[in-house]
Length: 118
Image (cartoon, rainbow, N blue to C red; front, side, top):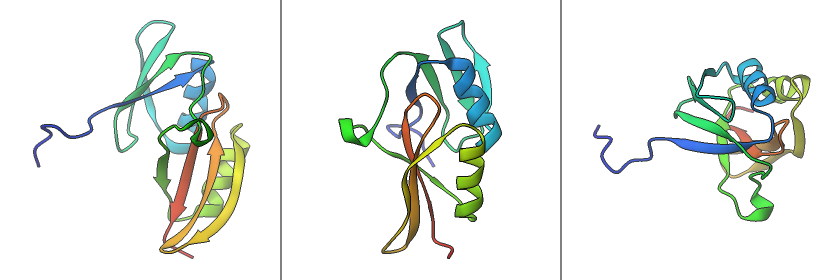
């Protein structure tokens, strides 16, 4: 498949780069490469990207795009998120095709996790 004109990279704000690296390493197994104190790139996430130093946060309430993870074990993923410092902002709910919940990372950025497994 050609990568021409396809989404290739995504970037997120982060108030604390070290905290966000620890969180995503613990929960999702991401790998990071630092590019100075105000930027880090990540891989092993399905799509490569990075975090840049910022006091802003990305939430759907503010009109942001929502990044949605897939999990075969929704409750287990939720538990890892909570144990690693994330917060659940929308409890697990059903929708046509599966179930999902929304969470914020320790910096306040919103994401969701969905599963088609009951």
